[in-house]
Amino acid sequence: MSRCDVAVIGAGAAGLMAAIFAARAGRRVVAIDGAARIGAKILISGGGRCNVTHHAVSASDFNGNRNQIAKVLREFDVQETVDFFHDLGVELKREETGKLFPVSDRAKTIVDALLTAAHDAGVELLTSTKVTTLERGFLINGTLEAERVILAAGGRSVPKTGSDGSGYALARALGHTVTPLFPALVPLMIDGEHPIKTLSGTSVGAEVSVRNANGRVVHRAKGSMLFTHFGLSGPLILDVSRHWLAARPATLAANLLPGETFESLDSALLAESRRNPHATIGRVVRLPERLVAAFAPATPLGKLSKESRRAIARTFTELELPVTRDRGFDYAEVTAGGVPLDELDLTTMESRHTPGLHLCGEILDVDGRIGGFNFQWAWSSGVLAGRAAGR
Figure (spheres, rainbow, N blue to C red):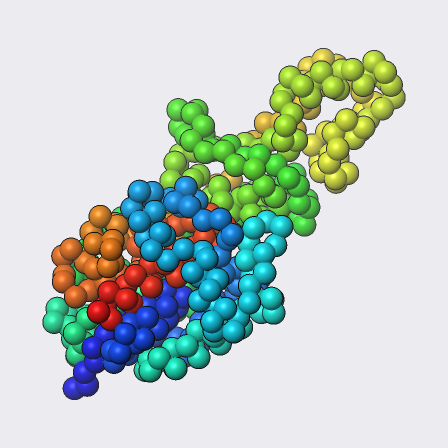
């Protein structure tokens, strides 16, 4: 039987951060991960570049209890994140979108820095070790005793990296509840034949609205939408996906000309038809030719009936997106749902049900929009858990 002061279950972004700060407090820390290679999820993030955080992060960028989320974010904010990585020799750069990436443009830079920091702090890493039992006390897998445990086992997104959802069972075993889980930041699929599927690779700026079963708009967002061979993706769709999933049965509609309305586009088409009856739709609708051809006839404007013209205006400003399902946890960047924040003391991330147990990262019922926000949650919640366990 081996013993340690703090055992960290899960050595992803939040787990490594927690382990580093607990060990820096002088504790013997053992970080346990089921994967053979630490940081696999970090390595594939941001297209292999790792979007470390965003230059401006607030609770409004997240789904969950925003007052509670704000308390955690304040304890370790963006500037502290930048300073932390600077101290590790990693400089971050801000892109036009506000996203912060390592200047190396390599996610491996982040993983290497975290592993070096963990090693320098004295963290002991156990890889290829799946935690199957966690008993009060704390006894892990029947072989490791710990005074305190930090549960940072992640969610269910991209399970091939080791984030398979097994941490939820450990949380339940120690008295916690888990809200319904579903993919977030996930592409959406369209079944059968549809013009959208013929546009694979085409990207367009759009505004997408989510309507619930009563027809009420529950979420609206603007951004870049990508047409694919299976349906829809791109930053806009990833952000909207969790709202569509949460509101099901729900519908999606896209305005492919943000700033225009049905009325304004119809008026523009009518005016152009009077000025130049031989002009085609593309003269007014400034979109990729493939996209215009997929949803509108090549008929000259002057030969369109009023009904046809109005139907075209409706299509480009209120295009129905007949999505049927999401692409699943294998393709989701994050998990929606998890352990509710009100089951924790948010000054320490300590369980209100099991003293000595701290939770952080994706296992909690918090998910942010695309742009580095979920990493910031991992850093902030991980630091709080690590500091508290270290004390």
